Structure formats: structure tokens, C-alpha cells
Length: 195
Ligand code: URA
Image 1 (cartoon, helix red, strand yellow):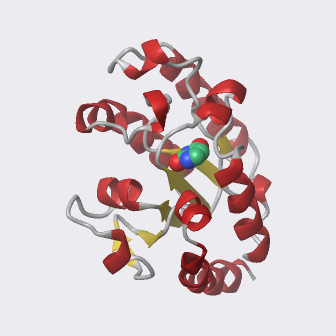
Image 2 (cartoon, rainbow, N blue to C red):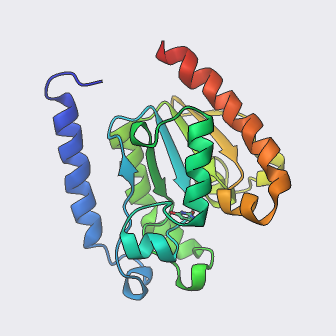
């Protein structure tokens, strides 16, 4: 909701921070990718989704979740009645790991201040962790996604819902049902409180 200059200043702060991240050389990933994929969406989103890291399509276009996993994420967002422009979407690491490998611990650590600042500026009520990495970073380093998905975690005043990564659903369609169950839990909170 726009209240005078508040939205404008938040937008500006986020844009200023994004510009800073474009200069980031805190880990070696930036040297091997085309561009920093900071994230996109509503600067005052109530719901934030955090993936793993940009893939080839994201690296080419500079936007998160625009490849095959992104197409599926769009369907999940539609099913949940979360318009993509209403939410905020980003990743744990902002630069593409080579050959789509998992980001290494030192890369995650180097990028963490960027994710933390994003969360602080956007200040979402709800965060959906897409996959194990986001869950381990935002909930518990020992988290296991098969065990811990679908369970709300309350942390620093926010509600966090871990679920499977859309890419995992592409590999294993039997994961669609549990993700839908997790999304329905988020819908219950998001749409109820929005009224
Ligand atoms: N997978 C991710 O984790 N993030 C993206 O942006 C795209 C695919």
C-alpha cells in the first residue's frame, strides 16, 4: 500500500542497494557470470520467495525465475492467487554458479548480507523458501527439505514456509502435491490477513 513518500523511499533504497550489489566482488561467482540477478517485484511485498541462484536464462536476462523452473513457479503463484507483481522474488546467491552447480558455502556466506538487506528493506510478513538451500540459510543450517517442508517457522517476526524448489518438481512430479499443500497454508495466511 502506498502511504505518501514511504513507498518511494523504499523503492529508492532498494534500487540504491541493487546498484551497490552490481559492484560486488565478494566471491568468485561474479567473474564467471554475465550479470548480478538481484531480484524483482513489489518493494513492499508481504510475500517474498527465495530460490537458490540464477540459472542460464536468469543470467542472460538479469531476472530471477524466468527459465523452466520460473514458468512452473508462475503457475504455482497463479494457483495461490499471488500475482507475480505483488510479491518479491530473489535468490540466495545473486550470481550464477558455473554449470548450475550448488553455490559453495563461501559463496553463500559472501552473498548473505545482500539477501539480509533485501529482507530488511522489503520487510515481508511471509517468506517461502524454495528448496533446501534457502531453507538452510534462512531457517536452520541442518534443515532437510523432505522433513521440514510444509511446517511454518516463525523467525524475527516473520513466517517462513519451506517447500520444494520448482526445479525439483520438474524432475519429480510427485512433489507437486506436497507443494500445493504448502502453498495452501500460505494462502490461508496471506489471503485471510489481506482482507
Ligand atoms: N532456480 C533458482 O533457484 N533461481 C532462479 O532464479 C532460477 C532457477
